Length: 234
Image (cartoon, rainbow, N blue to C red; front, side, top):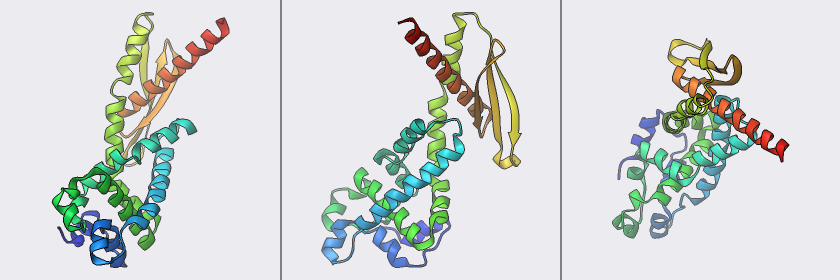
């Protein structure tokens, strides 16, 4: 088991109340053996805080998403599988206090345990230092995972759109319309046109990401138009 100070150093933070940090790292198996509080109550707090963190991030980064899509993406990035990735990114399992049996059975790698512990850590930091401190933690391990996942997800949007319009021999073009922010934190806005008709607009931290998001919006618009046409003909 690693010293919890290593976890603080990883995130560049220092708890005011170290008891909160230790409780966040205390699994129920250890708590039962040593008659101390487990991290289960802090999980409850962390779960709510992560929902809010992700809601804010997705709202700010995906301004063309409607409420339904925002809700689906938030659920995706606060589910157990995602929480495990955040925990692994900071090697959280190495800092946990586990009971003898849990330790012997490989508890430090158990997904449910890691996911719960990450929520507890977030809950403890929120109670100790507030929302913005948790946001800095999210910037370190949560948002990079989201961005990488989004890049993988967006990879096929441009090619799919191209394949869709090729059969009709229509012309597809992308236009970069703006670049905002400092050089180290640039945000690009791109529009995609189909035969000079604006079909979608996307924003991203790279030109490629902005184009993929524009293509995604265009595909969504084409799908809506197709559904409306079918409805009108029925």
